[in-house]
Length: 111
Image (cartoon, rainbow, N blue to C red; front, side):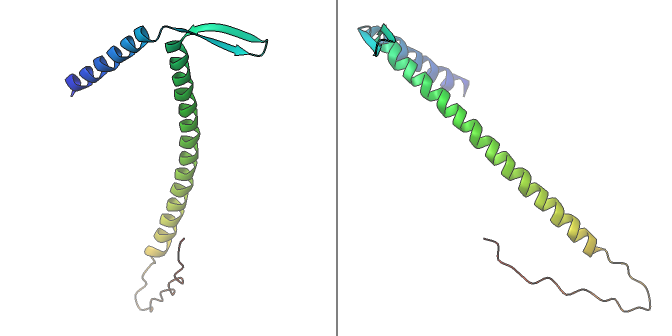
C-alpha cells in the first residue's frame, strides 16, 4: 500500500512541477487603486486552490463540532434511558406477596 501511495504522490508532484513550468506567463492582479501586483499564472491558481482547501477545512471543523454536540446529546439520552431501565428491571421480590408489575408506558413513534 505504501508503494501505491508513493507512486500517486510522485505523479501528483510531477503534475505540479510541469504545470508550474508551463504556466509562467504573468497575470496582473488589480483591485481598484488599492492593490496591483503581477504574479505567474500558476501562483494565482495555486493560491485559489489553497484558499479553497482552507475554506473547506474550516467548514469541516464547523460540521465536526455540530456532529459532536449531537452525539453528546444522544449519548446523554442513552444514559438516561439505561438508568431508567435499570430502575425498573430489578424490582425486589418478597415471598408471599404478589408482585405487581407496572403497566408498560404507551408506545410513541420517534420521528
